[in-house]
Length: 383
Image (tube, rainbow, N blue to C red):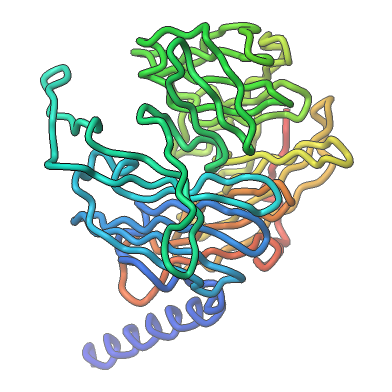
């Protein structure tokens, strides 16, 4: 009797897995170690092209895969020399305008070299040469040398910074912005660069217990402010300002407090993004160039209630909700941290993976519009 019940349970689980796999079959990512999908990253180029970095959690193998219209188009694989310095070993996309992109990759000349920094063994990049290249059917082509000391790519793979001595140069959509007024010590701790407007950037500097933001307006410093170290994302508002959460995501249903800073770097308001007994996380924002409206994207989850969803919350300049679109994810994945990313042409992608490492479910990269619309808003609102 017990054996029969066990067999039926196994059969039911297999059916559920097959159902989820069938539902998203056309959007599965077919290359890479699926059990390591939590370490993967993806870079949307436009509505048709995405570059996926698939790292192995327990090894040093990697794949860089270019998917076009959800089909594998090109793939490069290799083995990382040092898991702590993935940006040196693994090619990364630098995204330009109108669906163009180049691949940032390195070539090592000589043996591996290491240095000691604060008691830690760190890979020395001095014998690496860096290039920006086109990814063709023959591999990397039309290579252009890049300066050795670079930071990034940031902001969805669209921005890199590199040492200019003095200061840094910001490369964004093929245009360079010089910023000499930043010390060598500070630029070693750059961990983000966010475009806020035309030739206006927000440089994020990691410091113990806090984060410093330096706003650069056409090459000159506009302001410096500090934000909590736990502020895990910077979301441009479309008006030269930005939002950021005041704390890291929690595992409870506490409201997400979004701090808003205006174009002069002044925190002028805070808003609470709340739901009814659900965990909310924000991951991205997009500005509609025609309407000027800002849409904030993120996830809504409650494992106990089998709620696994993503949302698009559109607001105006007065923080009024203009639209709320919630899409459900098949609960068989049990993915309570799906990642949502946007591209300038308005395409929105959702990365879904099976968080518990069960076999048989490949990670999925699916357009938001292809997910099932939720009939419940889960009490989401702004206060």
